[in-house]
Image (cartoon, rainbow, N blue to C red; front, side):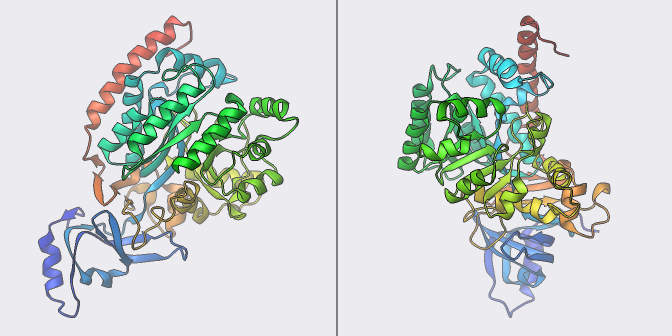
Length: 468
């Protein structure tokens, strides 16, 4: 049996030469014998399907007859495996991988543990090392695009550029002193410099990332909104996430919810992506839809922090722009969108007391086209369609946990592991083949992270916090 790997172009040429009926088109990559989940508007699925890629774009998707029309430099025969759009992580803090598993059960953890820890350890080097590790974890789990909020985002950008992924990177703005800014105004200037440097990058979108409504002033939020519209860049923010936020905004605004407050000050725009969006009512949801705001749904982080379950299913069914996110690796602990699938499906069934709620196809849509819509990138990524960017992953269907496969959506949501991702392609370039990352040295990335972990241990022990 032929090993299913990248075949030489000569195999494809031999097949194509026998078919004079087709005007053969030369392309770079042909993926064949695939269970293709297009995630297009019709949710078309092709058994024995084919995806044709030239340069950084998909040129055709269809059944096996399509392969006769193309002569490819590289052919990937996947032997029936699932071929689908790359997953899109709509919210994370990738560099925090180096803090993973610290203080997991500390009450009011953000203010009592994370902020103090960051004040001691965040640096350019920490951000670079953590982002490298986060990139590797995400790519090996099928994430090809992610939206990040942190400090020194220009360092994150360098790591994204090197590994070859796609990312929306938001420079944090917050009212108190942090590693890369003494105050919010300095944070805004840092973000503007970052935006200027990366505005025209083909795979990196620079953005503003005000931490939250309650950790910034009204004036700062309004200024960022104005600048984002002038520069045509996204704004990412934690929104309607916590009781502390509710209390601060209630007092500041005279009784309004965080979403109502943001609408009143003019900060709800199509450029905005709100992470979490847990504490919202029907009026808040109407406002989010009216202003065309994107929403990042982070199930595992939300339930781990006991903050509640976002009405994500209602928002999805009401037509809001909502996609899946993991939050940072101190919150949900993994950066695996695949690991979110199971929890998203099951918890929404539980809270709605309805076994039929949140079926697998909706979960997969929220991880692909829904996430693309949340980031206002649905014209470029999120589905396998001619003209879209070639961000594609292949899922192993021969692994024991995936056998047998009667319904590919159910198999992905209820059975798949992140480790079932075999190949990853971004912008038409193969970044991972047979689980080997081709663009960075994974062992070196891991060793740098382990070395930094020794520094973290020393700092945590010196501060009197428990670490094992």
